[in-house]
Length: 349
Image (cartoon, rainbow, N blue to C red; front, side, top):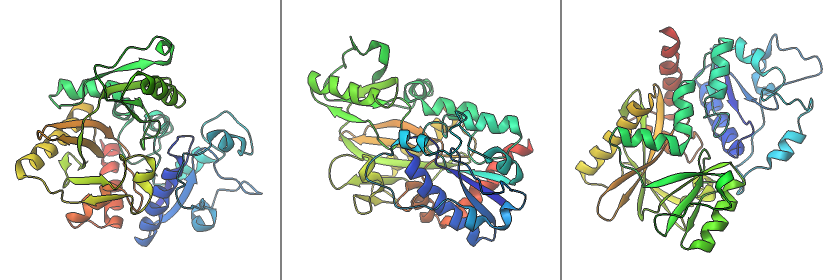
């Protein structure tokens, strides 16, 4: 197959996206596919602007990827580096190249990758892509909105509320301290703070509003962190994430050795089964059709809380979904192929 792996963009998770894309690209090439790693925002151009035989020289035309930095990318610098300085989100030749592909593997993370906008555009252009459709992606992306869906299906989640930047001057107070403040649509724990008093709360709001105009404030749940992937409605083994220092923030997510990840998680069978069932219920609640990953906390009373749904889970060397799949005998190339196969079923209806 001729495959575009789409990565990059203007999200705070831009660098993570490239790492996911690079790993997926190499895996699919090992299966014999012709695969191009493409930056959705910077696009592709050469001296002739000829893309007629782009899939004949995919390795030379692909984005070169480096390790994930410890800090989020400078989005202003990325915008300034674009040659045509267009205000169009799709870079030069992106749509044309994607239309030539048999399928686009979505390795995008964060804004304009997981919020359904790219998916909606691709639907209009007749481009087939991996992952979920635009509506379920949009709902899952907003942590405040998705939690309302969780609750309507009986999936427990932390108590809290959403706050807009217009309300920042006279913000609604948390139910209690400590609490968590985070951007409503962000990922990779960027802009997330655990706060213990009003002074920290005001600073956390200011920090979160740097990234977005909408934030979520919720009760802080002290406990163990877990994640559960779901493929075609069936939960994978539960994985536990134990950061060596602090909480599971941006650095701990992507720096090798920063967290201990155990799969299958060391849990009683009934708690494992319940957590997996909650993950499957989230899929039902949000209308997710292909693959996704849900994040959970378990407190000292063995109460389970669902934090969020990820519609395009990370596919980096330290990512959770590939580790879960490996436990049931699905290696990384096979997982990438499976994602393509089940995603293409959406376009056969």
